[in-house]
Length: 334
Image (cartoon, rainbow, N blue to C red; front, side, top):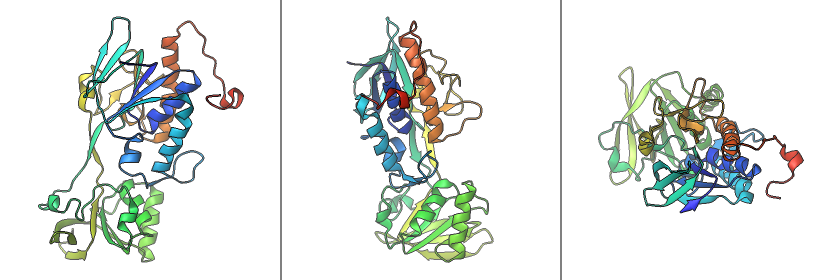
């Protein structure tokens, strides 16, 4: 049995930052994550993708951000149960919570922070007849290492931030980059749209809108894709890789069985401290829902900070918690 002050379900960036904030209050944390390493989506799906909206970092690779968060939390010696999924939450007789994983590991604490990101997730796949044939043979749904595409012919599809950002990034890696989108309007950040359009104008990439990929062809490896424009025109494009980036399909998994109030595939919380309808259980990061919610890493950091303050008050109801700045407290862990 693992006992701690706060059980954190999810070892993504929000969960890792919660360890730091808890450590400043002398609270111990133990993290549970189904993935085999900390970092959540940043480590598993796009470790080499640059992130532009972390304060103080004009640009930082997702994997590098995870490394920094681990270094930041290291002085507080968090525990990790990795490669296991939090399966059951039970309330004990002494007002504690018991979290049991799918492998039977038991964790006990007076507070739980659910920082599970999107929950269990899978990429949304386009409906192409033979797409499974080319999975791992020219069709990729996520980009872990962009060097894989060095000097290759790449066709990306999608209109969100991921498709736009990877198009910009791969323009300097691949020999040819084509971005295909069904509409002329994009869902991504205006700045990213402008960058893609400028790359198209200068011939660094090819942008094709009002079109979609309708077929894949090749022997054992992908060699070309068929593109159909909305006006009926059909093209064939040589391609070493087809990368459809249509987002992730989130599934809450066991979270649905925990007796928490749910919104649209997310946990409803009170924005005072991001506590759920169950006292002592908090939800932070992309897993929660409230009016005005923005699914940004920096918002998860804010939510983690307030949630940890309430965790402290639950453990020490008679102690007055006085905010102390790290500039006054000194180096964490000292």
